[in-house]
Length: 309
Image 1 (cartoon, rainbow, N blue to C red):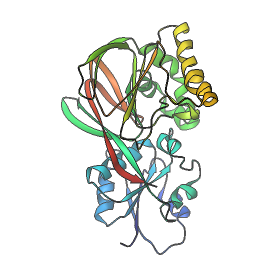
Image 2: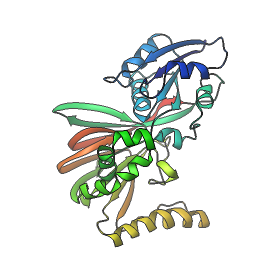
Image 3: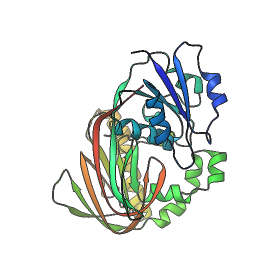
Image 4: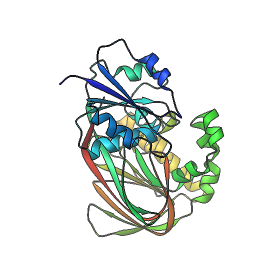
């Protein structure tokens, strides 16, 4: 099959002219598909596949990448995904060592025959504004501090300072994240109630600044990894930081130990399916996008959902 590269780009993050300047001289068929504010990539990806694309480039932020990956999985496409990270977080790119800040290097993977790898996706089923929705995520989904950081971050500051703008919103996010009783079931087992203010479910484990929140996360192992946080005082937060920095960081490097250690305020679980019920509405985010408030979610992994270079 002859190669056809389709470039799906977000005009709020880049321009066609910038991307065209980074395309190498080639005889490979090329087509262009722009996202819109109301559609971050689903229609553009459908159009790309309809045009015969064998490689689909997602040029934009994590929201664009998520939408393109979701559509590839929905259509069970064999087209390979190439990510050109041009957003604030660029979390999938960070986890897969895709070049950051170098459009030519990232885009070049669409043309140079870089071998693709399998990538799992997580799928969330929930009601949003009274309507049932099923949405995919490539990196992380969650409620609590991470979701509140997104809703509390100033967009103008984010445009100027990039991901550091999330740090500025951390205090407000902490204040908004109160402990609640969360009912959770793993892989169909009986539900258990745990007290936490933050729940992260990840396909990948690393966020900005190289911080690893989910040490066991592997985007192609067929499982999702969950982190529950319940720290509610300075002493408890110090215990949480110790667990991340020492128990699951430096000590693991020194000893070669592979098992992730829990703390009293930080619990890790791996599972293929996760069902969650909340006593009151909480903001849900997936791959950096605020979806609104939910009271129940079902999450499952789709192993080998797409292929990515």
